[in-house]
Image 1 (cartoon, helix red, strand yellow):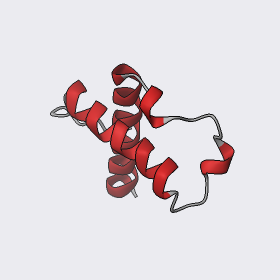
Image 2 (cartoon, rainbow, N blue to C red):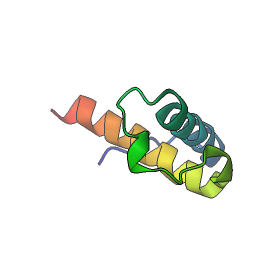
Image 3 (tube, rainbow, N blue to C red):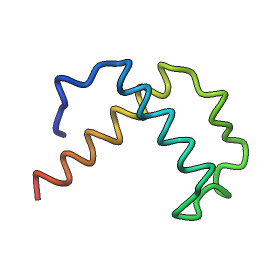
Image 4 (cartoon, rainbow, N blue to C red):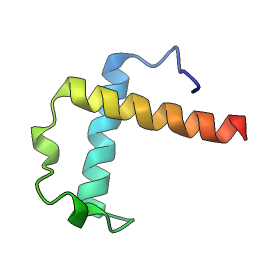
Length: 66
């Protein structure tokens, strides 16, 4: 998997929080019903950081390895 060396935990957490809010609030892919108990306000920064880093690194890997 590609790694983003410059991605700090703080920036990854910001992205992770925004991503979860987007998934649950805007629900563009109609997936929120799979996560009925997911409350974006209950996600801790370290959890959001893991989500943000994973999503961004997966996107980077998908984009540049195929």
